[in-house]
Image 1 (cartoon, rainbow, N blue to C red):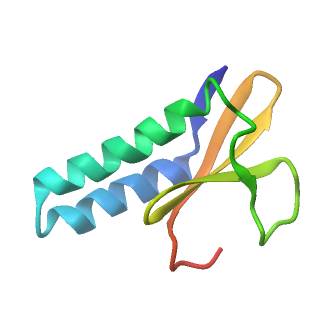
Image 2: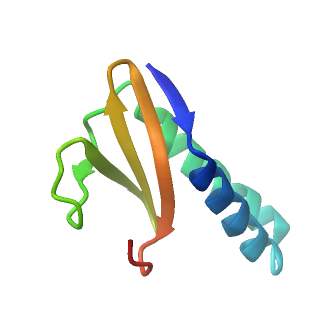
Image 3: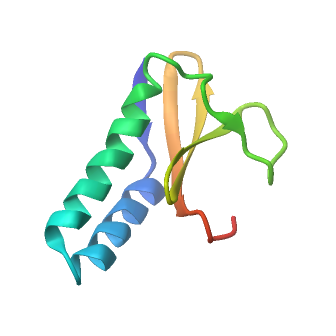
Length: 91
């Protein structure tokens, strides 16, 4: 499976990194790497995430890399990461 990151999700990763890096650049890089690693696991287990409660649509799923939600959609042989949100953020 191919993992595609939407422009929105890339922007969110950049914003997360920049916010954390204000206090700790090393920690910011580690957080982003953990999110990337969690998304990479979807390649082997694309249906492993739960359905996003706010959407109630089976094709929109999420995995958690505390304290972030990685929202994605599986279509054919593609996994599209559509957004990355802090658990306290609303969709």
